[in-house]
Length: 249
Image 1 (cartoon, rainbow, N blue to C red):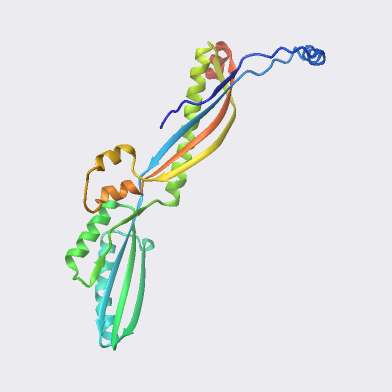
Image 2 (tube, rainbow, N blue to C red):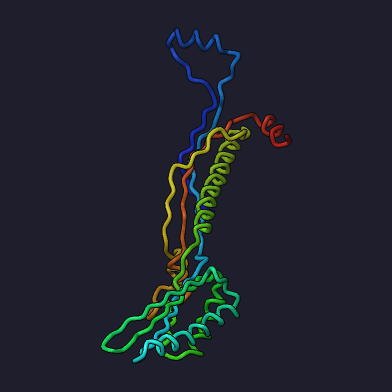
């Protein structure tokens, strides 16, 4: 959660006017007190690291007979599926596609297994195990990190809530400066929202000077999402006694 300076408007009384018609109207409504309020703008941020990792496992075989190519791929494909089952990967997180073609009199059979992991340690364990146990005809890709739609919606809401909390804190400090109490909220409106992917400044500093392929931690940092929200809020400005009464109720 972050706190940024912004405009603050406080209204504590009525304005005088020389217009006789308006003065007359004000006199007729003296029994109706003018609402006093504080208006503030504030921003809030929320950060979310990836909560999903996808991996592609490709199995291929080239044989003169189509049946032999299919059988070769099927054996290793069954082993991969069994490995995923042993590591408690849900069936709904696994997709399998198969493709066979004939090139220069040779049948090329290929199967691709797409796996989505929610546990990054399990992802690493499965990938390492398959690389160690299977031959070069099986290719295991590096994990691709991303966010679930549920996770993105949650971080967007959190950024807005952080902005509202900052707005209330700012209004409360202004009310204390004026020796007044902060009453109920009158208006809360989200004006802007912005999000981007990439490491935070501290992560960028720690990665500076590193050469060579990106590590898994660097890939996770590059896929991290930051959301910033800006809100406008107005609060009723009340006497301290009335503010204490509202807090007790």
